[in-house]
Length: 81
Image 1 (tube, rainbow, N blue to C red):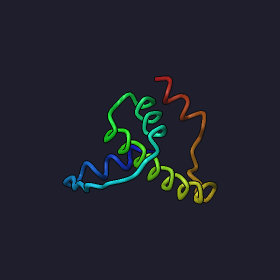
Image 2: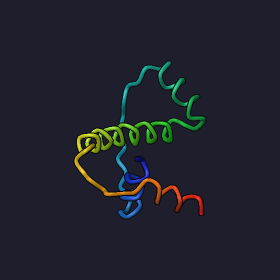
Image 3: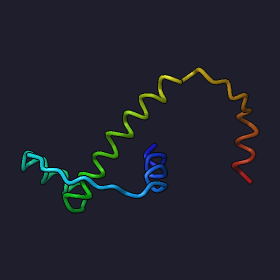
Image 4: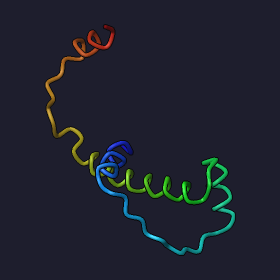
């Protein structure tokens, strides 16, 4: 899910945007504590998760619309090798 976003970002030169935001102090403390990292990393991670959630929603609209014609037994056999 997030890997696809990271791949597309890796192919392009990173452009950064400086922002000023007002955030509840308690939310910032909880989020940085949960991530174990600083504010910048925590905010980037949160933004990546929001973007991934939207991509996941779009993928869910395709659920059941593709017939991949896969044999589950063949897949399991290939995994066990």
